[in-house]
Image (tube, rainbow, N blue to C red; front, side):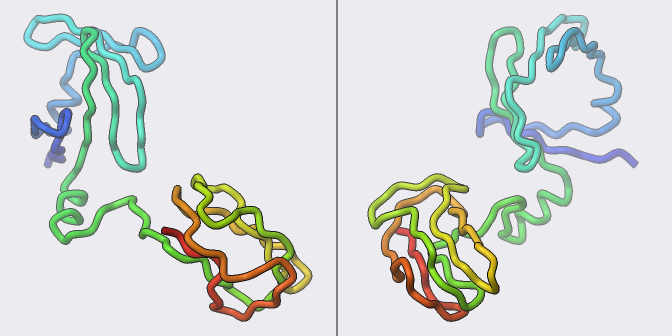
Amino acid sequence: MSTNYKLLVNNAASFEVTENSLQNLDAVKVEEAKFHVLKDNKPYKAEIVSADFLSKKYTVKVNNNTYEVAISGAIDELIKSMGIERGRTKLVNAIKAPMPGLILEINVSVGQEVKENDPLLILEAMKMENCFLSPRDGVIKSIAVEKGNAVDKGQLLIEFE
């Protein structure tokens, strides 16, 4: 039995392809991420410009035309029909202390824009320094602690807008 895939191109055109049809595609790799493809006796130059394997989204250039392609399989469609997005993280609006400790350093201020993985603060707990990184891009709404404060498990540390 062949696996079916749904391709969404430029968030507009939708196509269904089978694993068998993809295996029978006449494509030859000519360079890294570049291919020569024959379809219905017509030649095409194809290049994978960018790939996001986690979200299954690709930017592909075919004969100098660029396309955004999203690929989904049966499981992806089932998950989507259930109202769940695969590979997406929940939106974190607050950082809370996972354990009691002491605030050693605060690296951000209220109103500051932060990027994902930017260092927010350092919490010392059980003689170890724990650096908290931003879970997402955002703006700091409030900082509920100060340097030198002792905190309890579950206490609010930083809140995002």
